[in-house]
Image (tube, rainbow, N blue to C red):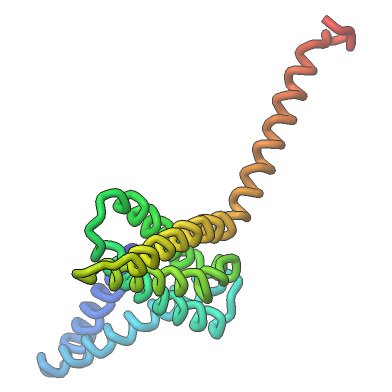
Length: 218
């Protein structure tokens, strides 16, 4: 479920429940105003957490994951978010117009992988190499390049190192693209299957139109 919708659902259930508990406490049990308020707020907190827990349980179940697996994936996603933030900082610390397009593309790919996996955690297992290796490598390369390019005086050796690092980053970008493709592989296979089915259906319709009711070719 969309995080915003999930929070909105919890609030929409919690507020009426809290108000109802206050009314029952104040008018039904004739409790003091402050006591009714405390009870209703405490009850509202319980309702909020209960709805949150139920929603989370249903979400985990819909993804075909155990709670342990989900927590494990959540930890990896939190780490990935921090790494992507580091990557963003490193890439845009380099004031290079020619590299701007490449840097934007890299961030687009990494953020898309993160968003897709955040929305559908079961896809994590399709992109394990991205989370365990490729993202780390790119962050290290980007930070190294940012550090070297910021040096005020550059000799031939330093310039050569910058060229090699940039070339490695370009190669790693292709790897990130493959990671994204891998995460979307099931969708691509499903789309190809549906396209094949549609093509066969169209061919069947066309073939049937070439024959009359007696089965003779028109």
